[in-house]
Image (cartoon, rainbow, N blue to C red; front, side):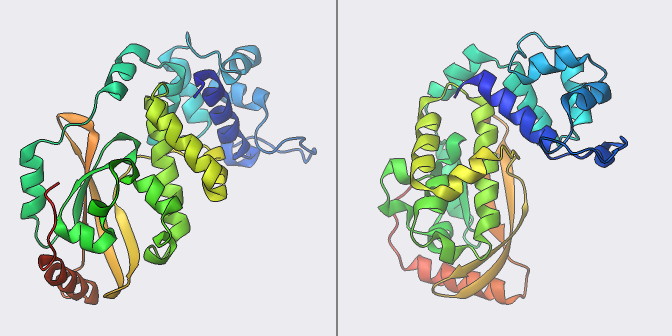
Amino acid sequence: MDQRTELSEFLRSRRARLKPADVGLPDYGRTRRVPGLRREELAQLAGVSVAYYTSIEQGNGANVSTEVLDAIARALRLSDAEHAHLTHLAKPKAKKKRVAAARPHRVRPELRHLLDAMDGVPAYLLGRRLDILAWNRLARALLGDFTALPDEERNMARLVFLAPNSRDLYVDWESKATEVVSVLRMCAGCYPDDPKLSSLVGELSVKSEEFRALWAAHTVQEKGHGVKRLHHPLVGELTLSYETLRLPDDHDLHLVTYAAEPGSPSADGLRMLAAWGADEVVEPR
């Protein structure tokens, strides 16, 4: 993925979503040839010259200062994740990122023991590119048989967009798909030279029209916490809260857990799945 192109398209997409009224500027009712703020309006808000901002938006951000990036982020009303993404695109740490992207993930045995000990909590470990690296029995019972998949197919983005049962499992599939693409886009900003990530994006773009459209929107977000509604073929609909915990010794590794409100029908459903999963023989992961 070309870093200059990514920077240019990201800034244009963020500028296009704002109207003058959103940032306190007057709108004189003139017809705009393109949606959103004009470059000169954005430059005014950021306190830089139009020529300088135009140069940055054309992808020439290598020498831009942190202060100017902060000013542009404020003018564009960027979220924390979008601000971080802008910084990654404009000031990439190329050598460090290339080394990290090439290094395979190693899941410590202690992490696998922790997953196995979480009997009543579906939990799995995500790496960069949203690769599913390890999981426990209940995660397998809830989300699918990861064990039966080849290593290269154990990826959340592949499963959401290419697995035939994905749209049945996630009640709000569109929301899940947007989240997955936004997190993957964040990863792409951190690791623009990762060939496996580029290959994954290319494959999904070819095979999924929905992925292509969402990828072109340039939305970014960190994987965090929230609520997911799932429709499981054995126990029916489940409403579960999820938490994403970043590991302190490897920020590319995230532990994802699901939980149900105590005493709820969803909690009963998880207990039924746990009992079903206990009868299954699962190879250690």
